[in-house]
Every structure is written in C-alpha cells, then in structure tokens.
Amino acid sequence: MSTQTGPKHSLRRRIVFSILQKLAKQEIFFSAQRREKFRRSAAKRDPSRADAKPYAKWLEPDWYASVHGLGHPNDAHAHFSQLGLPLCYAPHSSLAAEDGVTLTHWGAELLVRSGVQLGSNGSRPLTPDDPAALCPFSIRNEAGKRIAVVTAIFGDFDRLLPVDPAWAKNTDFFLFSDQVFDQQRVWQPVHCNYDHHDSRRRARFVKVNLPTYFSDYEWVIWIDGNILLCTDPATIARALDAQQVDFASFRHPDRTTIIAEAEACLRFDKDDIGAIGNHIKRNIPTIRKLEPLLFETNVCAMRPGDQEVQNMCSVWWEKIMNGSKRDQLSLPIAVYDIPRLRYGFLPDRIIKSAWFAKVRHKNEQR
Image (cartoon, rainbow, N blue to C red; front, top):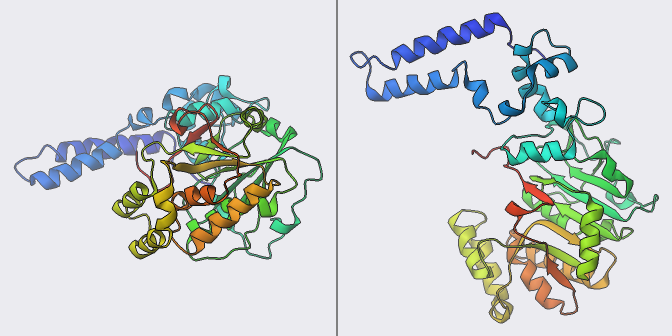
C-alpha cells in the first residue's frame, strides 16, 4: 500500500495550506461564500491537523516508527491512520500487548472511548459457498466452552472490532457476515442462511435466532457491529448467574414504551411508516397491557438452551417478520407473551457500561 508521506508531501501540504489561507482573506476578489470554501479547504490541509486527530495524543512516533520499520518518526501518523487503526496496532508502547505490536483490550477501550475509530474493514465479498466461513448449522461446541459471543456485519456499516485473544480460553467468537475482513483474529466467520436486501434485517435474523445455532453453549452474548467488548465474557456470565436470569439486555436510555419508540423511529426515518403502523395496529391489544418496558437491544445475553428463551425468540422473530424491522418494537411483546421467562437488565446504560462501549458507525460523523 503506497502512502504520501515524507518531506516532499509535507512541503506541498504546507504550500497549498498557505495559498488557501491567503485566498480565504481576499475580500475584494471573492465572495463570502467562496472565501468560506477556501477556509474549509485550508483547514483540511492544515499541517498541524494530525495533532487534532483523536489518536494523536496517544501516538508515540519514535517507538511506533521503530516497531514498524518506518523511515522516519514523521511517518508514524500516516501509517497509524492507514494501517494501525484497521489492524488495531498499539500507538504507544504502554498500550501494546505481549506481541509488542497490537493493542491490549484495555488499550482498545481507551482509544475507542477517546473517539478513535478502530477496526478492520472488509477486504472481499464472502460468497455463500466460500469455505472461509462456517455453515451456521455445523457449529458445535466441541471444546466445551461455556460462552459464545456473536456479532453480524452486513454491508458497509461497521468495522470489525478487536477482542482480547486471552478471552478465547472460555469463549468462542463468531462473526456472521457477507465479507471477509482484513484482520479477523479470534473471530470465526459464519455464513448467514437468511438472505434479504435489507442488511439490517439479516443482522436481526441472526440476533433473534441465536438459540437455533448456539444451543450447545450455556450463554450466548450478542453484540451489534458497533459495540466493543471491554471485559472477559466470563465476568459477564458470572454476573448474570448471580442475577438468576436467562435473558438480559440494556434498559432503553430514553424511552419506556413501544408507542414512544415507534414515534421516534418515524421521526428519525428508521423504518417504513406502513410497517410501523401495521405493527402497532396488529399488536395494540398487548401493547395496552404492557407496563413501561423497553430494551436497548444492541447487546443481548441469553441462555440459548432454555426453553422459555427459545419460545421468546420465536415470538420475537415472528413479530419482526410480520411487522417492523425495529426489534425494540417487538421484544417487549415477546417477553410479555412468555410469562415464565426470567429476564433482567444489564447494569447501567451502555454509555456508562464497564463491559461494553458503543462506537460510531462508519458513516456517522462526530
């Protein structure tokens, strides 16, 4: 991979920046709108711009350049931006794992919570017959591990976030996707047997049907593609054991009812108005009976072998199939329909969670 780095590129950047700055001040020759465009272009080419990057304060140029065999410490910013972020290289010696190159899990958490966008990008499409991925029906817990962590990334929405390889002692990690990623590490790629033009529906199919594939595990923890796992899943499983629940998710941080969530989905154009309207109309008798109960379903933990969990997931998927793709609108109904289900909430809100961190999607701006 070629990059524009080094003294010549730096000099050219400074010259262009200087010219654009001067043009932005020419009130006689240019309109205010044109001068503003020059100002924005200059800001993009500011030689000091690298120092404003979220990762800049963590980058140790001399150490990083030495580890990666770069010609000069000045090349560290460009290398880390283009390769270090997707491959989760440590920008500083204090954040490096035992291999001296990659990030520790707490180093990844530190960067993510500082606004740094880590993660691997898809490198090529994954065709249905590609042997690089597992058939979902062939998944077996042959090592007798207690936990499976599962995520799904379809389309160009998210990067594949890292997990600590040490956690694989008690946990298997599975990635359902339509692409192969640059750096999968402990993630085991899995084909998705559900095809749909809407990539969000494909991901939700995996989430809601986890008991179908992972009944050999005591616990399965689902994380959306933009959720970073920040602690050993074994710690989470022990906490849920103590809570004596078979299903848990985060309590919704902003709303408590399906009606309020439906209004928000319409306001932010999260689904088709007809699909949401029909969903509410079809389920209004149950919705009226519900106490304030709404989940934020970007993380779900469940015992896949439990019959009540299996029943709940069946109802949950039936509601999604016949209504809105927004799974928050269906989960409270499914929970209500299975009264013997032992459910609970994960501690705190996700923005304050010590177990998980929420990351921006690839197309989201700060």
